[in-house]
Length: 171
Length: 114
Image 1 (cartoon, each protein chain N blue to C red):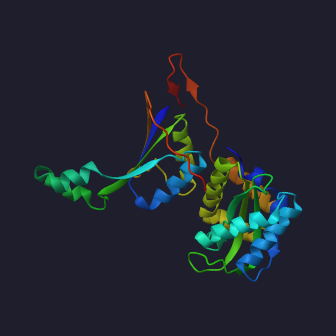
Image 2 (image 1 turned 120 degrees about the horizontal axis):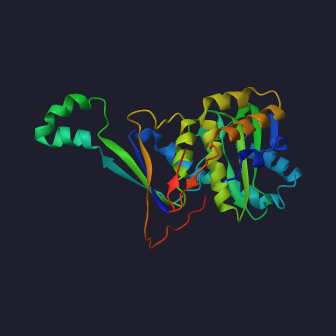
Image 3 (image 1 turned 90 degrees about the horizontal axis):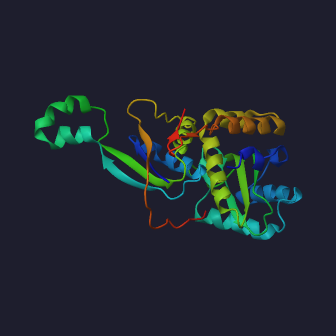
């Protein structure tokens, strides 16, 4: 299973952003993805993200949004985190403005890793403690360390022993 | 191959359990409503009506999630990951997570894509 810190590296974290609308916020994050050479083709990915947003907002409430899409124009599974200091109207489920936007971009063929990454980010943001630290962090480096810390905690490495007759023993 | 079974007494955690299963690569689970034995005996079987006092605060319904998994080591992963969202199966009354070995299997879940 891919670690979140493999997909969400320091260079994919942008703090102090401002945007007047959801589209503007997404454009800004997608522009940054393009600058990082994650996107071979920007427009199909932008369209895919907007199409998903039309289905139902990915603003899941409590100031958080996880827009995501797969597209042929994406080179590698990447998570771009934007922190919008003034908040953005994301048509979130609770109607509140969104500060933390985790944009997940996946290549067309990465279906399994993609859905796992969406679930992993959702779990990260379920934790009030992590969310507060993401909001208060002073630098991209601090957030990158936080994500590595999250990866180290769960799931733990599991040691499984097998007997000669094939039974599985857990410590 | 193993059959993973999760009995979840508190429905409010169902979303978390399903999300963690997805994260761990289990995308072919099924969910059903089940009734717990204690409340069923207490309220449906007259001779056990004396159990009703002990049933206060217990939920009559639970969720059962089941899925085929390759490795039963996933039980520990599920339990430890769910602690992160404050669902602790080691707390009495939360539910159970277990696996049983499966013999022959015919049929396959259709993969879904996000």
